[in-house]
Amino acid sequence: MIYLDNAATTFPKPPRVVAAMSEAQRSKGANPGRSGHKMSVAAAEELFRCRQSAAELFGAPGPECVAFTLNCTMALNMVIKGVLKPGDHVVTSNLEHNAVMRPLQALADQNITFTQARVVPGNNNATVENFRSALRPNTALIVCTHASNVWGIRLPVERIAALGREYGVPMAVDCAQSAGVLPIDMKDSRIDYLCMAGHKGLYGPMGTGFLICASGSLPKTIMEGGTGTSSESFLQPNLMPEQAESGTPNLPGIAGLREGIEFVRKKGTGVIFTHEMKLVQQLYDKLSRIPDVRLYTERPDEKHYVPVLSFNIEGLSSELVARRLDAVGIAVRPGLHCAPAAHQAMGTLERGTVRVSPSAFNQANEINRFALEIGKIKRISE
Image (cartoon, rainbow, N blue to C red; front, side, top):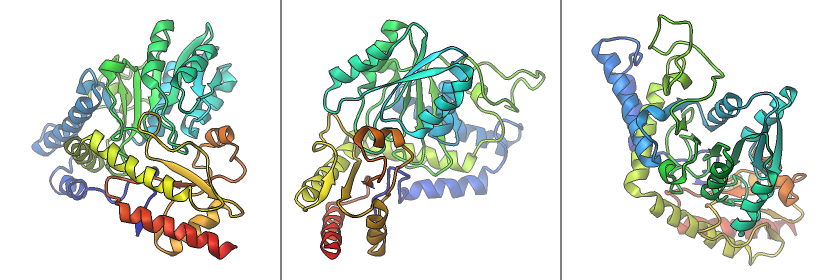
């Protein structure tokens, strides 16, 4: 199979990820932080090592600021519902995933409102000014994606974070498509909250993610329970990571996630990004020469895009194109990609798109084969 659905989850995973998960089950199967015996201590050490790796990769103030989540969606919900209070206003973008849009919509009954700032592809100055114009006196949070999961369009999150500091508004960033692909440094950017998936660009297993809080805490929690600490109190601890972690963690997944992070660190985000962008640019050039293939953005460049490309073939549904590709052993994702706001922005809400997203393991010959099959699909349909 030629797997080009890495924006959904990366495949394959590095062999060491699978090995670490298996080893955790064999030798570290105790509940971390809940007991004092050797196996429990070893499990707790495994969690700490993963926190430490993540803190170093993303420039967090320390490993204690890193909380494990099930996925990026959970981390975003924890921030959005943990920061906002009735009457607050939020600024987001017009390219957001439902992991942002649905929590914001769910808070409407608390008189919490939001404004979608328009992202101008290729013009960061205009995008920042649109965010500035969307701010209100009661704006309590800026939350936006680092890169669109549909169009690959990058947002200038560092500049938006600086805008937030200017107006005293904290910022949360959805790093689902950027973690492990783009450099992210909390110290330099002073972004307040990073939300990310572990199973995409970090090459960890599904069911893993992070919430990193620069301040070391959230204003309030959305889930409380056992943490293995302060057990004499009915109150949830008010500091990270225990504040944001209740119940038994996914130790095998976290062990695999640590190895995924180490894979990224050893290979280098810059090397991974350059490799994947070359593949996307190669595909863009080939698709642009096929009649009736519709591309919705300019040719992706390194400054304004990440390696994600969406397109359509005129006269064919995205689902049909994906099925025909699947029949010849090529995996992509059709439809709306859980991001109707992003499709609304480009006029594709009714039909969706075919999305292609390579990983560090894809090669140029696979892109050539993909373009060849798209040409065949077009000819067969004529």
